[in-house]
Image 1 (cartoon, rainbow, N blue to C red):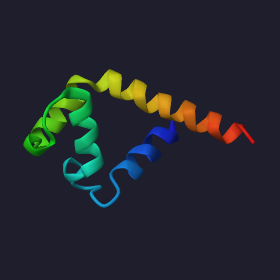
Image 2: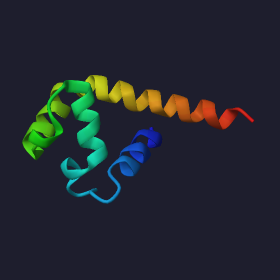
Image 3: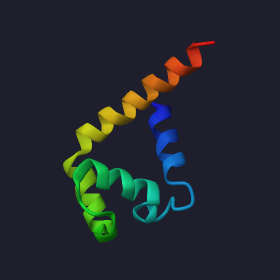
Image 4: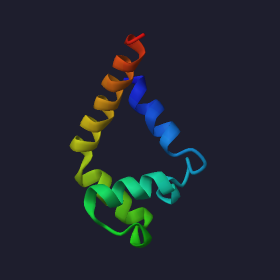
Length: 74
């Protein structure tokens, strides 16, 4: 369960307290939802995260699986 938090910590590097300003987060929201990154505000990103919370959680758990698999391979 720590791996998803580690991913979020790394994904928001430089903008941890203002994650909606993170270029990576804005890009991910834009590519997933189709909302232009220039029009994203804190409110829109929080609404998006709340509406898609189960899919986002599934994505974070998937990143944990991928990281564990990558560590297993020599």
